[in-house]
Amino acid sequence: MLRAAVAGAALGLMAAAVAAQSNADCGEAYKSALEKLERARHATPPERIAALRRRAQRVYEACRTGDVQDVKALFDRLDRSGK
Image 1 (cartoon, rainbow, N blue to C red):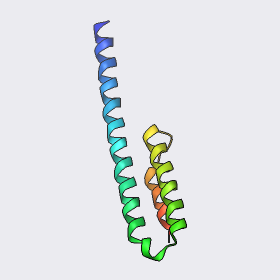
Image 2: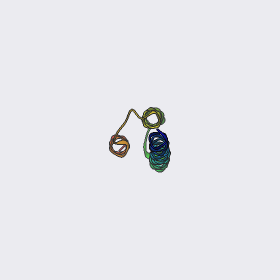
Image 3: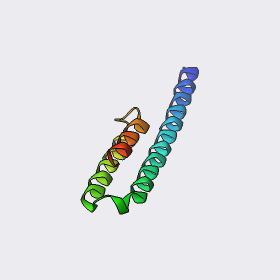
Image 4: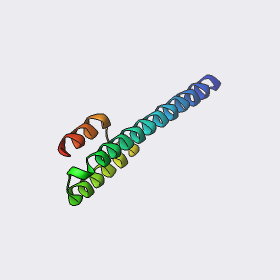
């Protein structure tokens, strides 16, 4: 019984560490996408920048909630659509 409880606690801690790592990856990818949008700001209409920022925000929120498996691919596609 005690071993099962310890094993459950260990699994819970590992899952929390993976979730924290995943959230960090989401934040880094989001920040990178916003920096790329900022660099392209002078050559892109403001309406397009606003739409891309909203899309980046949606991808970030989906990543944080765990609804997205490959966040890098989504931000890469967002980057390509911004050009």
